[in-house]
Amino acid sequence: MQIAIDDPRRPDVLALLTEHLSDMYATSPAESVHALDPDALAVPTITFWTARDGETLLGCVALQRLDDDHVELKSMRTATAARRRGVAGRLLDHVLAESRARGHARISLETGTEDYFAAARALYLTRGFTETGPFGSYVLDPHSVFLTREL
Image (cartoon, rainbow, N blue to C red; front, side, top):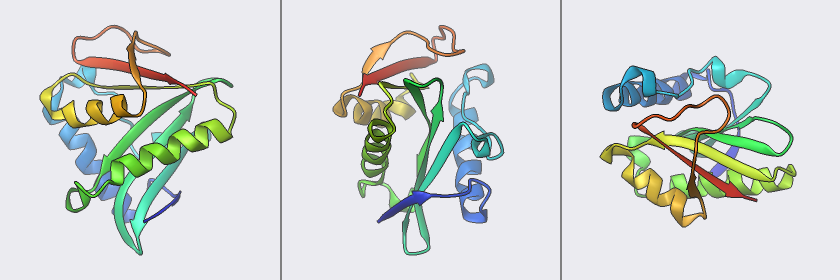
């Protein structure tokens, strides 16, 4: 598995992100969906990576700079065919290492409270994330859980 910076507008990535956004809107109320579209993931304050096996897309993740010390994990998604192969864990470990290497002090994320997100929440907890309150521009929302980790 190779993890590298990539373009969120690449055709196979577009398909994965379209699936991601569809699932988010099918699972949570629209006002509680904070997933970004491909163009929003291509801005200078966001680094976007994909995991691949050769040319086969396995998953993606993004890191958004909030300020010099604080970054946000965004748009982590594993391709359906690649689930249960450790892709999400590898992507998360990569982003944590990259965040530390860049000198950030804290990484945070927002995810859903619905059962659909249980596996993701469990993964984050195994990597040392703890529940926190809203950060950045987020507000309290019964459909959101906010997690953070010091680096």
